[in-house]
Length: 121
Image 1 (cartoon, rainbow, N blue to C red):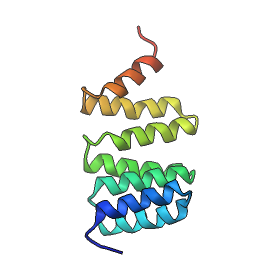
Image 2 (cartoon, rainbow, N blue to C red):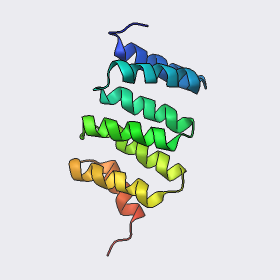
Image 3 (cartoon, helix red, strand yellow):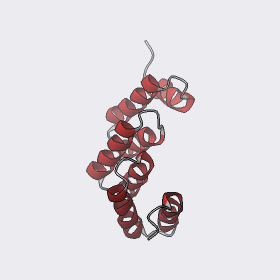
Image 4 (tube, rainbow, N blue to C red):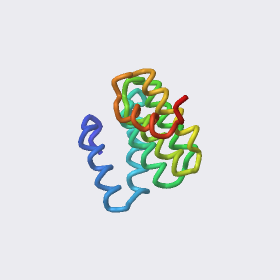
């Protein structure tokens, strides 16, 4: 593995996912998380992989870590929203979008989803 080529390795993990090799992607992203624990992007992609493997607890752990590392990085909020929505936890899912809008009020997609899903007074 190339220790300093994170972008290439993230792309490789995406290739594994496209080919349906979630186990290979999970192994790669887990290694990246161990090597670069302060990188929110690798936590996000590891979370996506775990979500595809139906490991909701693990996916949320990684999304939450990515958010802690970079609260302005929108992707992990959407990843948590999608994962929780798939698990039937709509209100908890919307909570992630609400947090995103609080951090970044310009996030139009999240605002639109919130307006559509939550009843207006």
